[in-house]
Length: 553
Image (cartoon, rainbow, N blue to C red; front, side, top):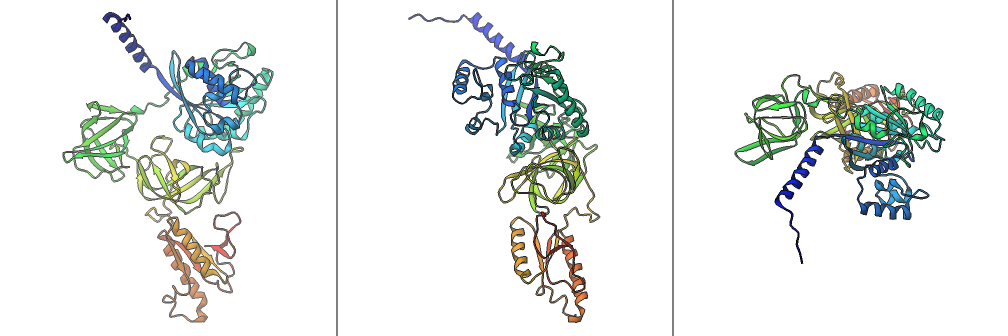
């Protein structure tokens, strides 16, 4: 049997070709984008068309796609391209996207990572996950349906998350007869909403994702449109509008690396700025200062590093620096704050419980947090803000949150990496909300940043038992609770007789306010004075602590 050997010259040539290809690919810029919008607007089919037309599918993938299209496809004939990204069995059975699917593809000009996000309102939380790292959003609208509530919700969310490159993809133009008037009407409707939402600009493209019209090449069926195809726009749009390396140096400590007694390093990914050996730094929120003695990486020490690199810093002094602390340039350091104003996207099946203790994870730090105030609920249709007592699934609200210890105050608008956070239910460990830090309200003059506790006055014959049950529920979720009843107040009111009922209740109120000021909830299990039939504000229907004969002070 003959054996063919490649000559050394041929092997060297092949190696050079591979190296040249890898180097050329590394030089290409990377664009991360998402597709979003309402259900059945064609998001998965659009991504499938981009993958198919980019010729990045292997023969076995095409064979599997043909087989899947015959078995579970949703098109009359040909390939169902949505199956390239809808991989879950439940997605194929229902013909919808449930989870976020990430796909990579490349052209001669750029590399892409695209996230296909679900359109159903039930899975809005998955869409937020996909949008959190994107540079651009393709918002699809069915030309025959126009702008829907979910279109507005997704547009508001991507703008809220800092995405400024938006594409309005008016899809399924074939079902609208390729009519320019219908396209113009949809664009005008969306522009009115965008103006109210603060969206400064967007690129509108009419297309048919199923056949590829204006997706990867210009469409002859829509000669009235003289703009770029979607792929042309994606190849030329700026990928990184902000130069992170030019901003102040900041790095959250993810791990304190101490392999031996001779080495202590602080590992993390640089969020912004540059750092050099010998530079002075501050460890926040405490403010301790030192200098960088080494910048250590897997490939060896560096003289300097910049945003996006993962490094380990060693310091000249043995300062106290732990996981979750922020190493930053000493000039213009963010303030230490214990109360933040934020926008919350509620993702939990159970509604927000104000004053309930949640775990808040921001950067590499996890701490206890309490939503002390719900400023407003945002209506995604009108963008109006209205009062509300709680947030339900997919609601967007503006809140104030009290923390159990200080953190560096960095707004989301200043740093997407350091200004975003999640809220976690302490009982189920489920993520219940995604949040964006907006501002830092004053601590109501108390100076310590702690959240004031609630004061509830329970009346009625069974008030003592109800107070015990309510206290048990509150303690189970991490709240500190005090019950004020006849027994606990006996010593305080021992010098007063029955005729001094008004003075007794005055003392109860003052004690309750003192305990509440320390951050604990107070349950008053007493009858109000006859002359004071309303000891406080009756709890309104729909509030989280609704019940009969309960008053809020």
